[in-house]
Length: 355
Image (cartoon, rainbow, N blue to C red):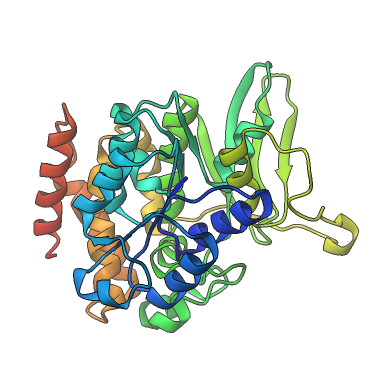
């Protein structure tokens, strides 16, 4: 397989599964964490390496190292692997997704931005999403008539903060997620609920429905629910580990333990909350974006700029959603007829938002 984003959370978990099932790793693609990359190289013995910056090539313990986006596309095209795990973060992951599909490789997709911005152009016939919520929906859906779908959210770092404190929260507080440890970008997106907006858009493309919503489940043990026409609801309950969806994405079928079962007696109780717009202002756009999914390009570009500004101490936490909402209001009827339009609109949005 090819692992894009090998030193991130999804990449590390992918390699844990590769180790468990003795899967071959042909290519590792990583960013700036060269120390971890070198450990991965030593263990998995990949044939090729791609990193973000050419200045770091000399630090990598391998004799076949390249750098940059074009090199990622090149290794996808020229590799023998039939599986590409795309765990890159952000818009950067779109071209590799398209290249892998073009090369008729199986795409295990953790880069949610690919579907968010280009869902209508992505052939899903050889694609599986690595995401606990969408995995849960896939796991539950049967040959029964479905009424609606529900995914869950943790509520993020500030779910229990008083609203008047949100304007002054620090970067450190924003990155202190109550349930899990992930990368900076997704942790901030969880706090603003933008991540869940992305997942609703993903679900729209994956399951061909706009009849989908999200609620907060504070312990992150229930990941998805399917509401059937007969009035019954089935929930997918599992410990919060990406190794389960990754295993199915890589192997197709899994017949041995990946996670420990949840002891509901020890859990004791579960708490559910509505996603409220006064705490998560971006949520007011949920129906608008589901009804016009081309707005996913606008939301993603504006959010990437805003999150970067927040992490650089240029804006406050509440300004992240303000920037995204302003961009959606400004570019409220995008015309997207092909992939080139997506890249052009992405550039325009980033310029508008002050990238």
